[in-house]
Length: 460
Image (spheres, rainbow, N blue to C red):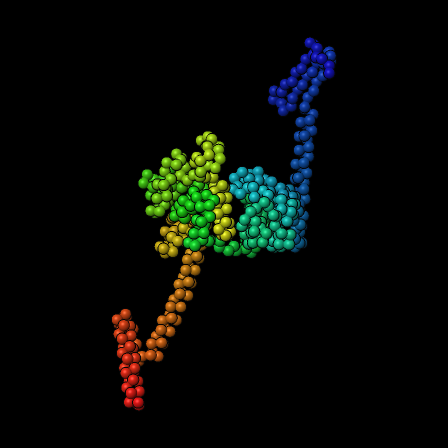
């Protein structure tokens, strides 16, 4: 490597009022000038040529479209795209997907799952498929390919894995919904002019109601396993059922959100933009007792677990036997262990909320009260709990039919042993008439026995 001499000079500057750099080097007594002017000029000329080419293509496409319209022919989609000022392939599925994730990726709640499904969706739909040409028939064809090839099998566990393996309506709607999201993004934010309007009712499948109530016998089985795995979970479970709050609000509940008398708590509503909306949940006596029992265990969080080993938390290192906050994902894992051990494999943590809401609706019979407790803005979501209460109505009607059959059988039996007038009088008098009817029957039986004994003695 040559050593620099004292007479060597370097000068690099940006000329005033220009977009290019001026460089001057003096090496070994030789002066070298260098400028980026030619590069910038060539790039500008290339941009002018491309712009003129686009204008010529657009003019030619408009001419072809007019000729086709005059002849009554349908214009080629590529020609129509150029005539509208768009580039061919501008709204390709892969290109739109990249822009969507660049804009909305960080704000998507389940971005990890959707990011894993995106390549599979693009393979089924076609990476270069123009979303402007998408119609309902293409969406049905997309569903057919999904059924034939099968969904992607990500690293899922429990019920989510079972849904993917069996290709449920929820999985199909997740795939078609992703395509519909990309279509709406290109239409609203990329100013795409679609040739056809999409109607989700034609290809979206109806998902069954997944509301599930935990029965009292199932609770007893859960309690038995809870005592073996984590006894602290029982209080959290009972409070979740009594308050009907979601898992995150339940695990991250702080003492600042609890009233002084522990008669109500304040939580945030779910949904984008509702993080600052405060919802007040009133509590019953059982929930108040649970809160009072938790006081003094942790200075910030209401519900905690006993540390089985030294654990690092936001307050520092907690030794074994100390109290640590309950993380939502860890709480879900522990509850899954208890549910599986109790044989309740179809239950999730969210079913605590379903159970509390269903019991509240059963005992009050007022859907509006349940809606206010759950914090729903409309009764559309709340009505799903009415489906479970309908089962109670069906069971009640079956019980009523059985009771009526049993009552009719008793009346027919009485009519076979007594006169109709005596039975009607006994039914009108109620319990007193029933006793009088039994007394009359016993007296008649006694008279029959005396008559039989007299007849036997006379014959002898």
